[in-house]
Image (cartoon, one colour):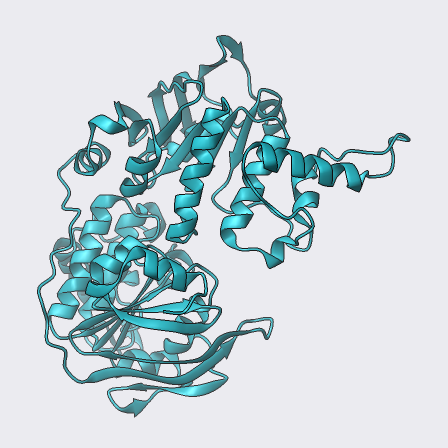
Length: 498
């Protein structure tokens, strides 16, 4: 890719970027959230057309106007959110769009489809059951199906966008083996990621992009995680969470046989019990979709419990309204900052008082006091290092990291007894992650209780004092973080018992 520039209204997502991929290579495209990594790969896959620049494949200049053209040139892409049809079988998903037909050219030849899938899965060491339905297989297996889908359509260049975001440690190890096998067969792989540890174990070279510009390309075996973090952010980053030993206090949150259903009426939380004490970070670890979202929604008053109870400081708060839960001393960093954390069209000042907007000094007799609201915002912007022109800009104009800082500033200003932090660093770069981690540990060191819900096992192991592993709506085990290993947690995350 030569001199690729991509401009959107008011934003230069890619600025004169050069990117080369060699045959049989695993290349990582590394950068902060919003650095332009996915945009660059979407151009290669034909989802965007570049504003300027050229693409060459095997020395020939090509114009990739859409994904069909990309596929014809041997380029396949596995997106972060899988594009599979859950009620269809593995074979049906793999052949979708390229279905083999019988001699009359009309009827689908399912027997041939299954044979083709078996042949390609054996060739690349990607064992799957062609007749299994997508809705019945693990997330790791779904990713295999996505890779097979691309290979079935003739991909020689495989782009994987954040491929380890939803995998257990064992599935990540399996993925590394699969990618090595693919390159041994002459395929070339591009990984879009921000996870430094996995980069070191999987890739041959790393290309770093910062704010749309190419910063450097380095050999993986000649660099370190610290050096990559510095290239990515532009400054030194402390990748180790500084955490002192703490003596825990009284129980702040107690959950007893709690159950809840999702919007379809399916039971997602199945009689869970645990407690969180003052001065500790209790983490819930697990693969996405095992009941974490519903659990947090019940604790914050956003969903009704079907059974069991929740106590805060020995007071029953089961099925209490969100406003009362906030007033009782609960802070909440939600997993979806856009849907639950911010009103994107409100100013920063207005977002920073949500939940306290009806209290003095921010309002009197139902009228908002904007002098106090703006003064409050300026103080928090300074204290939490929110990068913004001023307090009047709309929340939607900030980067993901700065939006998260606004939410954290608002929730910690209330000085809650219990902080519920759900996926607090989702989509953030290492610099913003360092900031969020520091603030969470500060809460614990002040003697507050913290319930951390995270899909990132590194984050769980770095921050937690105790870890509860959730699988299929059940807590399958609780371990002390200092004794826990990735392997042990990975087994539990896949449903195995401690």
